[in-house]
Length: 115
View 1 (cartoon, helix red, strand yellow):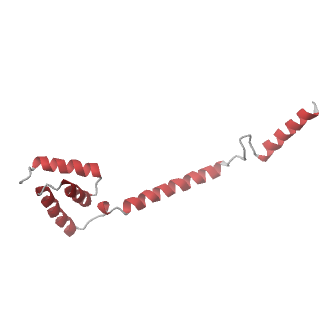
View 2: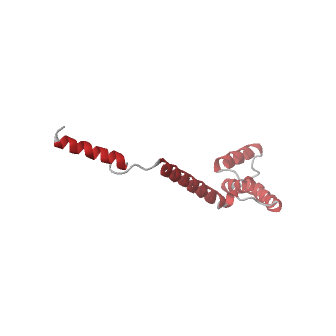
View 3: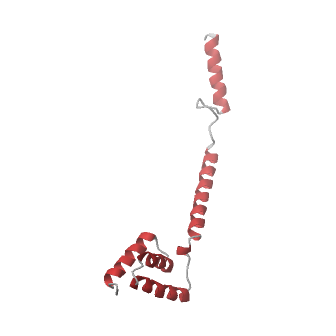
């Protein structure tokens, strides 16, 4: 084997033993990949919980507050204030915007406005 070829073969063997690759750096061990993935998943879950928990529309309401909100909801519907009614429905039932909008539209269809 010529000396140049032997030198290249030797450097490949050294790279293989040291764990480096031809992509520019050492490979990341599987355990580090797994730990990084788990850390990112936990961070994403915590972010979702914090954001959802801080939303006043989705916070639980007491029975007395719910009764007051339902009166306000009925008044909003009677006065044709659809957006306020949707907000109140979300607050009472803890649902998303689409579900609240559809529920309010069903209520409006069942009970026509008295204006």
